[in-house]
Length: 419
Length: 170
Image 1: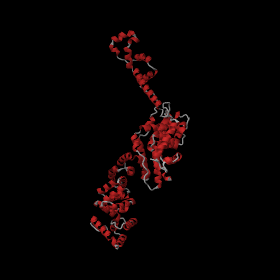
Image 2: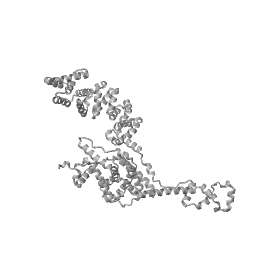
Image 3: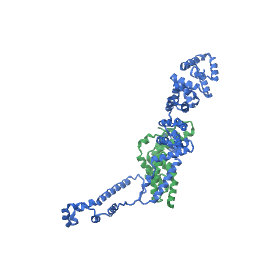
Image 4: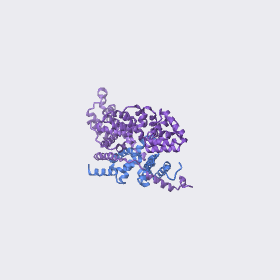
């Protein structure tokens, strides 16, 4: 059996274990940044200070392991029972209730007064004077007495408040705001967005929302920093706001940069087609040309086919990323002739040596394909025309060259772009 | 702040990085780890007088972190964990990036093990604790620790099968 085709079942357990251990040792979790540690450190200091002042025995250790569920339920049950008892005790100590009880059973207390109270119904209402209280208190527990005393004097039982520190804990939103503030401060210091904004990426959508507010309301450096940060974490949804900001001359550069970063390929195309400032459209096209996805190539071809955008596209073809150039070469096989023509026009306008050499090779390796020939025709440079002149001398290539000429004429109404 | 308080604070501060790393391994991400550690630190600060020195301070703090983590797991919507499937390593020619993606993928798989298996694996494999100590820390029997550890490793063999050189039956 080939060693490469070993299966798990064929191997001794020890080998698999060793391999798994090796894999596990490679595991790498995301590392917390210094800010997170600082936040936790500050929280520790605060908690230590607060707990140091109030460290009574009020807080239980909470370190019993939670798998001991029955104990926890026991604690909950006891707590509930305690609360019910406390409630009942409270009811018992309410003066009016207590008095009603006394009056309801007058015989037990003072038989001589019974006739008086029953004969005089208006005195049955609780009077709340001290004499009544004296008559009540002997029946009360110590706790109830204390509660009653406190209730009457308006005092509250002093107790340590272990939960207060939890209120000090930052809410999620506050934490995010703090994080955002530190990122903006970093950007205001002139550092790159790539360096400062990494921490925002896991919660892009939430930060985008907060940043929109800041971009709208802030001014000066903070606003500029927020625009830059938005370029890092924003989505297509932020484009309208950024375009609005781009109308201010002092913020235009930053805003357009951010638009370029946040926009998807479709959004870039839509902004180019929408028209407007030529310089901005060109910048957006260059951004599209720098993208590397098949989607970008598809949209690029679409824009080249659009009459209003073609010239602008052909002006920036030298900005096409190598990946996009590869994709455009692949589009020479596209089933739709318009796509092939758009790819030919884009590649033909590039003046770089590698594109030319690659086209030349295609001409040599695929002598019956007219597309590479059309690229050279559209290019129209001296080198390209020299190569075509050599091709024309070969009678076998005559048909291919004529096809290329006809296809270009049909597509553009002219022989070639530069001829 | 009193001298004793200062000592306590120094002790807590010295354990912060370790505690944070543990929380990240348990939760799989820094943000949740921070939340858990915040809660744990508050609890620990208030309960510090109950630390009797019967175990190391680190173990004591780890136990609190595990308790908070368990509460967090039960309160976290399970749908979220279902949606966050580990991503396959991206196709990249850059060897360094590929290695990093692979390391992150392994970490993601560990952080998606069932809660108890994850705890046991993290403490045994990454905190270098003996199964006996882990059993005591997690409030489990030693047999339970071993069975969770075995289950975790079997699960990882399946999920990380593609990364194992020898290949596995998927």
